[in-house]
Structure formats: C-alpha cells, structure tokens
Amino acid sequence: MSLFDRLRTWARRMKRDVALVWFAARDPRTPTSVRLLALAVTAYALSPIDLIPDFIPVLGYLDDVILVPLGIWLIVRLLPPAVLADARARADALTERLPRVAAMAGLFILIWVVGAAAFGWWLWGRMAS
Image 1 (cartoon, rainbow, N blue to C red):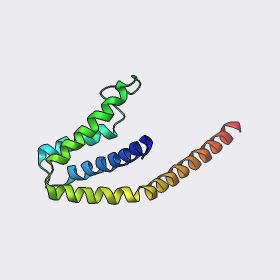
Image 2 (cartoon, one colour):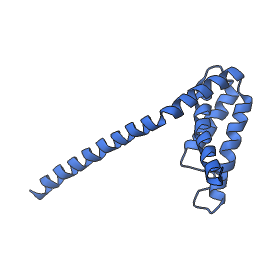
Image 3 (cartoon, rainbow, N blue to C red):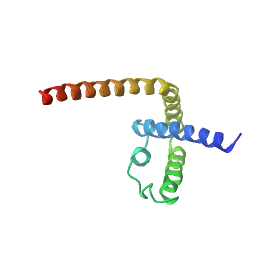
Image 4 (cartoon, helix red, strand yellow):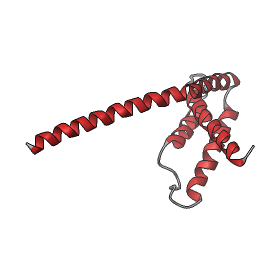
C-alpha cells in the first residue's frame, strides 16, 4: 500500500471518527466531562478557526494533524463500551450514506445557483428599463 493510499484511508477513518465523537457527545449515557470534551473536539475539527492559522507553513496544519486525532483517541478511551459501540455503528452508517448526502447537497446548491441567477437576470432587466 502506497503512502497516498494510507493517507487516504487515515483521512476516511478520521471523518468517521469525528462523526463517532459527535454521536457519543449526544448520547445521554456519556459522562458529562467526556461529553464536553467530545463537543469541544468536534467543534474544533469542524471549525474553520484554528489555534494556529493554516496559512502559517507547516505549523498551521500540524495542530489539525495532532490535536484532533489526540482528542479523538482520548474520547474513545474514555467512552463506556456500549456508547462506543453504538456511536461507531451510527458513524459507519453515516459514512456509507455520504455519497447520497453529497449528491443531495449538490442538488440544493444547484437550485440556489439557478435561483440566484434568475433573480440577477430579473434585477438586471428591471434596472435596464
């Protein structure tokens, strides 16, 4: 397996694990302290705001490559086994549906673009008159 294939597999697993952490944070069986940590890790993983901005060479991406996996690892270690199993099953089901979800998102984006273009065309016609 090449380095690129290993990185791609790792990235897919990270996507699934972020979903796993999100589902675990929403489970009432999760202890409050682990739930707060899970919410913080999920928010950091999905947030466009980083501790170290991405435009800083090397260091900008290092925080994402180190902090997010470390947080996920810690949460997985702290979760009760039943919660972990349920969250993993829900995350796996979600990642199997992602291509369909992406197709629906593309459809909605297309609808918005067509609507914005129609509005712009209508507005242009009103201003030209």
